[in-house]
Image (cartoon, rainbow, N blue to C red; front, side):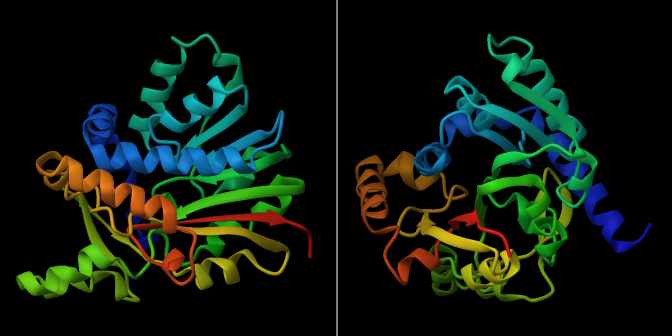
Length: 271
């Protein structure tokens, strides 16, 4: 098995194990709940009436379900056996399952979708950070998008202040882990795979001149990272203040280029 196959095999295994408890963790983590609402709010600003959405790394379908409830059609893709299974189980119980299509497919194999066209491509919470070169996925975008179609990618960037300040606690390797060009080993449910980090400039260059950036904002700059879940539970008042601060300044340069994640929204205008 080559390194790429091993990487995706481990990603599948890790998120299949995580899929069983993912929804509960999402609901119980205050920061993750807040972050998801911020992303959804951003996406709704750029969706147009009757848009067809292609979602990459759909997970258990939390976002897909949200947008389907709003009246949009969502084509959900994910590599993980477990995540696909959870979506099938969840969507079968909804009243809008006709607006939700499920396809097991890696974001590097989007040609498997066929000749379908979409108005919006969406990937949340660093799903695309599992590859060293984003072009392995974005090269498919022009052929998948209708004229003036849009994309919203939520990416893990190299600079995350909440991780970097861990240097003062002696966690030097952790504090600067995002700066490695070779990727950093992530551990999900005991399974390890590499995570790669991309700057806003890297993402913009990867999309290419055919895309115009509509909005760039940070996600989780002052708000502690989701992994630091003890902070919002212990200091809810302070956390709400940090949330509000993020909401007000997340779009301002140069703060919109750093954080736990960054949200990049662009429109395809052709080459």
